[in-house]
Amino acid sequence: MYEPKLTYGLDENGTLIHVDDAIRGKGCNCVCPDPQCKAKLVAKQGAKNKWHFAHDNGADCIGGRMTALHMLAQQIIQEEKKIRTPRYQGKHIYRSEENIVFSEVKLEMQYQEEDVNRRPDCVGIDGDKQLWIEIKVKHGIETAKLADIKAHGIMCIEIDLHSLLKKEYTEKDVREILFTDSGDDMREWINNPEHDADDERAREYTKKNMYKII
Image (cartoon, rainbow, N blue to C red; front, side):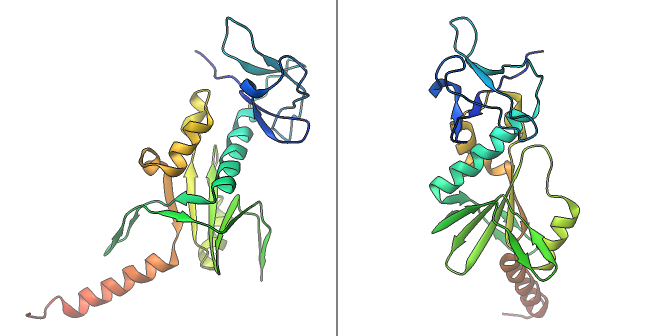
């Protein structure tokens, strides 16, 4: 079975770089994106095989592709300052997807309030509103973090990029999931207090008016 290769590394400035943009061989001074590895990489740019990075020490690292995908999604969201939200399907109301533009996007921002101490993957900021954007590559939001999000009324979505690990993903692949209809099934509301409140108001309205003759 064909195993996808590592196509992104970190250059000497700690910036994510695609193998197509790297200097051949060891010249780019790139390292593996996985913080548990950080081994030196070699840019393989031969004529026979697809271009990719290989670990100079021959290590069989599986975390590099996952970390690179996570970082790439964060980088794109921060650069574009926007996201396409999931559809909301409540019991009484339905909200279609929409594109939200932020004034600022912060990565790995420390959130501290009362007994909560969390670091969301991305935080989109628009005035006094914030949207947490969690990037799922292998594991989703852990139970304790999910409980904090709901208990503190934090607006949050999760974007599932796991399917991209099956191929040599590109920036275009990630952008399609983040910003287009093709990624609708990969985006999910984790918590949306505003929509939930609207859904409850719709329920109450229906309950009060369902027997009225108009």
